[in-house]
Length: 564
Image (cartoon, rainbow, N blue to C red; front, side, top):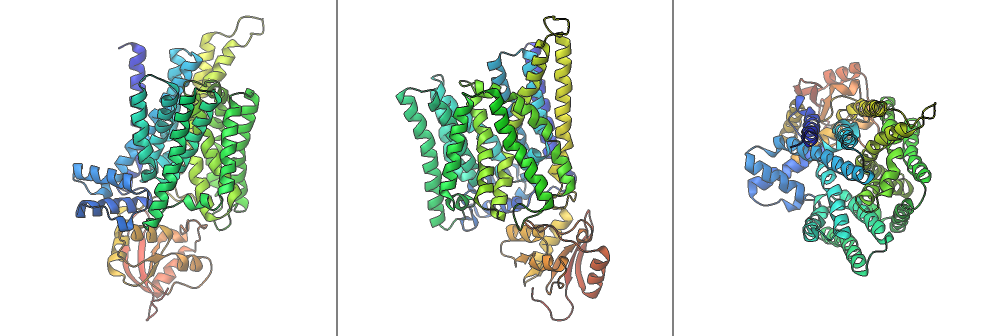
């Protein structure tokens, strides 16, 4: 093995190790799933292992694949799904960083860069995605979407290769068939993104004026995927399975179709227009997100949702650094019409389109969630382009004339510049890393439920027969992991902490309600004072308490008041 190849192998191993380690960081304070929805998936896997069949009565239309993965891993290892979910997600989320490195390599080959430049771009992109806050948060949370982040680029690559190459066509076709069938069963929202990405790949393919057979094949694959999504989710709804997100598209079908047209037109236009117009278009589209987030700090853009904490604005501002370099590297992807450029452009434009569809459809909490999830998918292609941009700047610097009219600056100066810029981008990504481990509304650390908090939720589920009050996380955990228990609600908590009357029912409270506040997603957090919490506990009956990173108390009201 040559030194260059050996170096890349070591680089890949290093990126994978850092990415996995970053996604296992939550194990330092809890071995449990790092997101609330994760308790639902591990409960489904737990019941599947116990009964030998899927508990379809509690299934959503997109629970099948991820539940099956957790069930299989649990059966093989003998461990409870509750404790294996986070390691499984850490591996799949980390693997998506390697996909990004592969995309960079293919684009660099189109630009005919030297081996060292390509390796530098690959390393930067891999390391940045390994630690970058928002991407780390979404690919490290116990959710089926972590698997979708890995499979979506592979799906787009497979379709693109199927349409553009005769070599290994059957193999690529087999990959397309497997992912084609799996996506709607994996994750509803990711399937919508996948449909938009494939539509973009189709548009790029048809713009090259292919043969009639190739055009028919392309149309069949992409149109077939949309029909399959629509048909499966229609059948699922009639089977009484919950189908999230689809109603947000069906509520505004004309608007969604208009944004699909924008996606197709933009992708085709990018292959013909100037680099400056491309940069202005994407820079403006993404730059408006920063302005929207800033405006949301003053007044909620989506009424009824949380405002942006000032600390979060500071962390997110660091994203401006890689965005600038991504805009610089964008034309290199649009010029690569044959190899992998159309895939990267489609991966970039599809989430941008879904975010602007959400902003123009309805400013409600539902579309706030759609926009929030949609923007995460732009990070992988954005950082792929940022890697290209860093190297492009250093190449342009080397070719620039010297003051005395020489041929250019020495190669060593160009390499130093590339190294410095790489460090700047990586540092900017590291600055955003805390986003992965805090609650976004309160910036309270850490996110996720600790074992002591889970024990408090378990006690409540086992011993409280009537409706009880708490915050969003506790009520969600019990609802998902103990589906037969009494439901919790956070409305009485929100009213109380917002200045209203105390809850008239058992209340599972935290000490942090008096400091950082109670998490009441999608609404903004509310809080009281430590003294008021202490007085409330003293005036009522504390029937359970636990100490930990955030002390928890189950409090029953005095007398016979037991109604929320």
